[in-house]
Length: 547
Ligand code: NAD
Image 1 (spheres, rainbow, N blue to C red):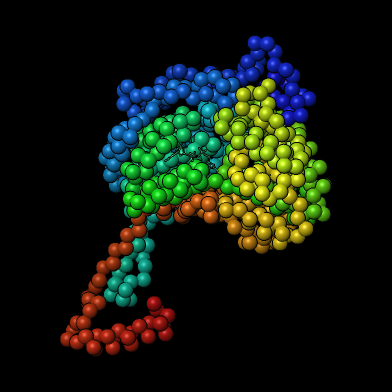
Image 2: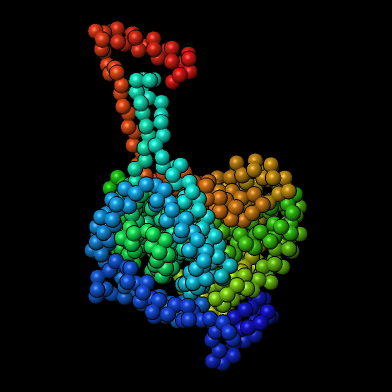
């Protein structure tokens, strides 16, 4: 390991930065400024719906703290204009056959894979995550594009349903686009959480007005550019940028359906606002996810998986693991392996592969992480590894941290930290592990490690989370684009991925055509005969299992 931007968290391999050294500019390496040039910012921000004299807000690169871009801020009036444009464009888009729309997704899939390096640069510059974690976003979005590109036609096609009266009633269930989707996205997975949800909305014939987080708006704009290159009419995807509490409500107020990803607190506000308008919403919210290591687990695999589970994107991942429940019989052996791996993780700021973890995104995240760890330690918890900020690497770095001796009342056990911190709890039985894993108001993701996969699935059935991964951290379930993903309890409402992930963007419409006879007295029958005839018919239909 070389270079000032790479350091194991123990610090022993981290040379001090030379005076005047630029942590993002190792010899031959690209800097954040190389990746996000003024020309790129000017080109991308032309697509923001905002007036000519719009106020600007600066974003900073988490790796260095330097100003990254000055972004135009939309007003509520700009949001209304975005809806007007989106509505006008949506009609023609919806009129295209599903296959034509799906073909755009498939072309986008190829373009994204081909241009991934440019996209990865922008993600890293805006979020400060390690490149390998940025690549997870490419993987997820390519998976969603391919899945909906191939399967949208099947999900959306008309379906014959049993009619009111066999033979006489011909009934079809059809799917119509909602219209314009209001999509609000957070900063932590900016590619996946903008494009991943927008793709099925587009495939279903909708337009989207998207408000990404300001910090990661360039990623949203860059991926929109790729989708337009793949054939999406530009007006069908409107992007507005601005302060959440100012612009977010306007996005909800204009929408025919709301797709929100973010914190549980904001999700509640969004849900109430949508409900007041009788507009549906899917809410992908926070988590306090647990990983269970059973007594028969392969401990090397479990330790390696737990590192990914806890520290991907520096733990700023809704489905990452913040609580480890380990069978007491294997706890010491597991922790030896786990803490050794965590202690050896390489932290880095390069716009290149090689680091195991990057930076936190903001001062707010750093403060939450510091507060949770410090409070736990003050109340008797022990730091097994990590436990400090690393300003020598970058202003927002914090070491991957493992805590022992945490009790069930500490914030680090009950609240979402959303950072590189995990606490370990020893359990005597599987029942205890399941019960403690479920003892949270959240219910997003969980992970179970065992050599007996059948037993793993049986335990999964008892965990109250929307996804459960057996012998994997989160990527197995999240990457299964054909199967629903989302949260129970305070982790959300509705699902992305699979049939639910696209059908939420549609209205079901039943079209029933009555033939020959009405469903009413006819052919000279009076009401009484009609009732008697139908009573006999209903009994016969049940006996014959016809309806
Ligand atoms: P946040 O709720 O603060 O912000 C999310 C988005 O909502 C941002 O675009 C923000 O500008 C906007 N917003 C803020 N106030 C608003 C308001 N009053 N009305 C409408 N919009 C408003 O969340 P965050 O801190 O940016 O993101 C981290 C959170 O997101 C974590 O809790 C994480 O678990 C959650 N998350 C969940 C998933 C999931 O799939 N379940 C995925 C990623 C992140």
